Image 1 (tube, rainbow, N blue to C red):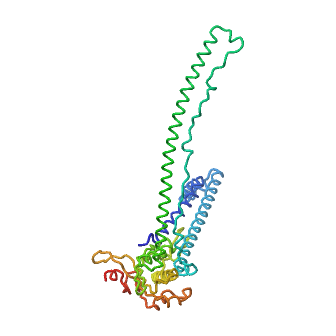
Image 2: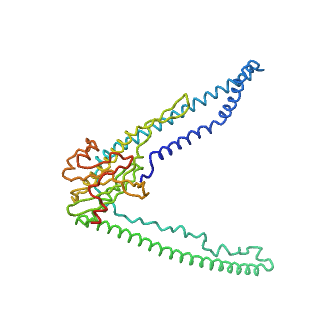
Image 3: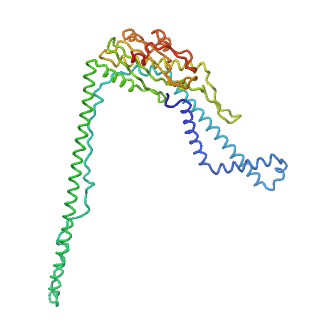
Amino acid sequence: MAKKGFLTSMIHLQREIEKTRLAKIRTNVEALKEVEKANKVYLDYQLNPYKLQEAESKAEIAGIQYSRAVLAEVKRQAQEENMEQVAMLNEYLQVTLYELNNILSYTLDIDDFIDLDILKTKPEIPEFNIEAFTSSLVAPHIYAYLPPEPKGMQKLLPGAKQKYEQEYAEAHEHYNRDLAYYNYAETRRKAVIDIAWAKYQQQIKEIQEMAIEENAEVDQLKIDLTLGKASAIVDYCVLVLESSVYPDDFPQAADVYYNADPKLAIIEYLLPTIDIVPEVAAFKYLKSRAEIVETPRPSGQIRDLYLRVIAQIALRTIHELFEADRLKHLDKIVFNGVIPAILLATGEEFKAYLISVLADRSEFMKINLARVDPIICIIGLGGAITENPEEVEQVEPIIDLDRFNDS
């Protein structure tokens, strides 16, 4: 199913616009207060027109005029904001329609070949954070602990020598204690660093081994692809389809099957549902009603554009796979476009086939896809496309992948 429909995108956009509008209003709080005041005063004078003639001062009249001017200015700003909102909504519509109408042309100037070497990983080795183990401790020095030696007359004082010797001994004892603690802390810090370094080396080894393993898988895929192994061809086709860039609302999921004889690939592709097409044709701001109104898109236009979209997806998928297949493993491609649906009688889910086409490489590569009508091109290839997607009217798949796997 689609990741998000057009309606969801429009709601999101309108919410963003509303946030911007409210932000502007919050910056003009004083003006809003004046509007409220103006409304009350204006209503009062409308209900009692004689009161205006009885105004006691020109100041009151001036205040009314000012309030009305503020109200007019706020109304003008609101109109401008609404018109800007309409412009943004219409621009978003145009971008959406452009994307839907150019799904096929987008890929025509792109080389869809995938060089598998770009899948190889280069091991990213993190740096060893030695700074995390930095110590705030500084190695003690004995000179910082020793007391000053008595000099001059101090030497002659009674007990000076004994006092100095006692302080000297205590300083050495203090120094030895601090040195022992520092050596202990350093020994422990180095042990922690050694453990962290060992873990770091193991991490590097694991990163390198993982890169070697992943790159070996890429090399094996290249070998298997060259040899034409079915699993490698399927994996390569999936890579090509996953690398294709579509609008965000597209599910972009596919099941791929390959048969080496007769070099046939079957693609069962999950299509977006019809709600990918905007139901709104245009937005318009009506000043008389001070509101934004929507012009609905005719159901016929919705159906026609949706059919054009799924026809483009089919042609684009076939084109991308043939172009990416430089080893010529694909001679034929069957494209089945499906959407999830529900049987109304039982509530059971099933895959509804909306488009199915078989393309032969030699014939398909002659087609100038830049100039074709997608729907007519599908029919010209002998394909089938639903005539009533709204009611999930199915077509008969050229090859049913489920039945093909069971056979």
